[in-house]
Amino acid sequence: MKPKPPGHEIRIGIFDHTGPSLGGGTMVAAHIAGLLSELSRVDLIRDWTGFNLEQVAAAFSLNLARVHPRQFPHIWESFAIPSRYSFRQQLQRSRDLTAGYDLFLYAGHWIPPFCYAKHGLIYCHFPIDVPLDSQLLTIDKRWNRRHRLDRWARRKAYLLAWHACLTGYDHILANSTFTAGWVERRWRKRAGVLYPPVELNIEASEKMNRIVSIGRFVKDERCSKGQLEQVAAFRDFLGKVGQPWELWMIGTCYPQHDRTYLEAVQAAAQDLPVRFLINTEREKVLEALRVAKVFWHTAGLYETKTADPVFSEHFGIATVEAMRAGCVPVVLSSGGQREIIQHGVNGFLCTDIGELVTKTMQVAESSSLLMVMGREANARSMHFSGKVFDTRILELIEKTLRRRTRHRGIRALFNSLTAEPVSSLPTEQWPGSVPGNLPNLAEQEESHAAVSRRETR
Image (tube, rainbow, N blue to C red; front, top):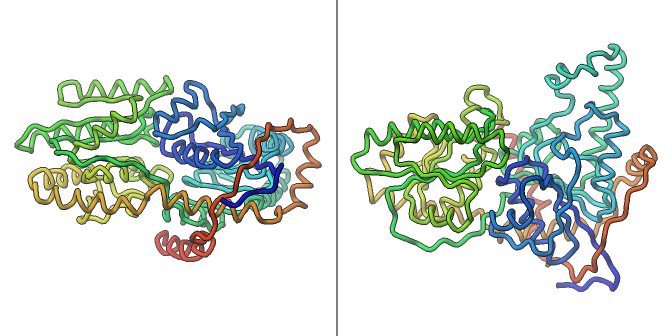
């Protein structure tokens, strides 16, 4: 650790803009918050309705004792312009959220806010929102009431504002090469690839005839992890396999409106050897993985119907966790899953549910194949360790904080448009700096972008 001058204060805000449920996106934001909280004052910003910081820490086995939760109103609305907010109102929302920080880190998949912090980073899980989304504008009554020339002028102004918004951030990171490719296509910006951290140790154990599935239970078909289809696939699998097997379905289900989907899945599995672990402790999840032979993941079913990459699996943290436990992953070939699994070596990438059943049968009927692929899956999972993530994010943040503040002219313009003062944030002494002499993330961005372009063609 390199000591900082006495009295030097560093304030960091991490905005988890992924959704109300506890998923992989929240895990990444909370992981970064816990990591940086050992060095600085860190606020983890999200909608805390329904659960608290302690529950997040328990869900992902993280130490968040020094992290400060911060609530922000209307958090699940995008910061896209035009919207139901005026440009001035959007700037004020952004200022209320980001001002006062030395570093603001946006972790999400929507349009990020304008960055009033001294420095900004984006960790993009997937660029769901795009500039001037024609579909959103079509259903915006306020937009449609405007004169044609007014809409033309606002489009031009929006594109300028959009460019200014993204240039207010020092770096853009993506959770996979798949996501980085779509950042470049939709945002016209290059993104460095930094795979999410997967840091867990699971002791080897005798395996049971068990398939494990992990994923949020959500009512929206587009965002579904496909649990209802998994129950149907398991019924088909049981009719073909000669031995008894179990399916364990693990996931979170917090919003009340998603309970109807969970209940539908439970009803479909009522006469099958299926067990549900909902909003359960982390230890029980790891124990279920430790003794399981096969891991199923079927996110991306809606993508096959719409050809929209938004509904694919943008990375697959649960898949890596299962592989760390020696489970053989049998998953849909969707998005970032193709970067994790080497087909036929440490798992199977399937085109549909029928192939999912076929490949699971292949593993179930060969103990030698199961053992070899399980070992290969564990070895492959080490490429996505938390240590690799921590090293690269700390090195990038250290270099970012040492830079001169960028785009002061743009920030001055934004400040002139938002007259209301921002309340000061509590501060804490910075006890030390992050380690240096680590691999340079910026030097790898060009090669990542080249790979992204090849894969998206």
